[in-house]
Length: 265
Ligand code: SF4
Ligand code: SF4
Image (cartoon, rainbow, N blue to C red; front, side):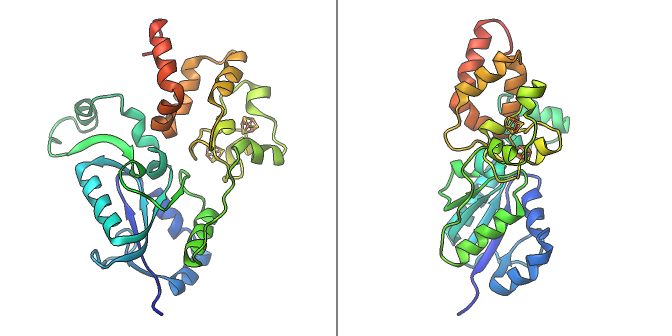
């Protein structure tokens, strides 16, 4: 039986998730024995962009018409599609500035001469086509990627932690950044899997892995506000990595309230 054909692709993004795959140095040779990577522009100079794929991994957001056409063509040739990283799953950093018109962004970034850019509002790839699996992280965690790949190759479904970062943080016996230092830590709303890396190094969680299932948004806002942390601080932090989803969950409502009070718009 021939090895499953695999493609790895990047839309608009930093390629950090693809780099994490390359960083699986100890496992790369074994991966290469089990799959045939036929299309991976970042790592190969010759690629087959037509062969049907058993598994395709897609990183990044849709931020141009070209991204969208590319994503649809990948979906059409792939049996199993995996969203790789927080940009593909939730919108990530590129979605942070969607509130600004694209003409303003084009002018600020390129200072003219970039009219050819078919830019559009940055949205997660998962908004446009169905995906069989979603692997958040900014970047993804290598151990989660390997577990997911192994499960797909075995025809199974990987089990990932479905608890907030606080759970991992507590098991590491860290002093809570919110309770003890009155800092904005997104750990209670963010999906675990990173081993609470940031709070374990004395830095509050920035929410880079996106929201945990059913985050208690209102309780978190109240918890921060009870400690005298301003709405502006909370909103800036929460919007950084997963703006579209937080908008859906309630930041839009808070924005409206703040505007009514004459504050941040
Ligand atoms: S430091 Fe952050 S991640 Fe850790 S328990 Fe406190 S809120 Fe949760
Ligand atoms: S602690 Fe938060 S910001 Fe740090 S790696 Fe984990 S999810 Fe990302």
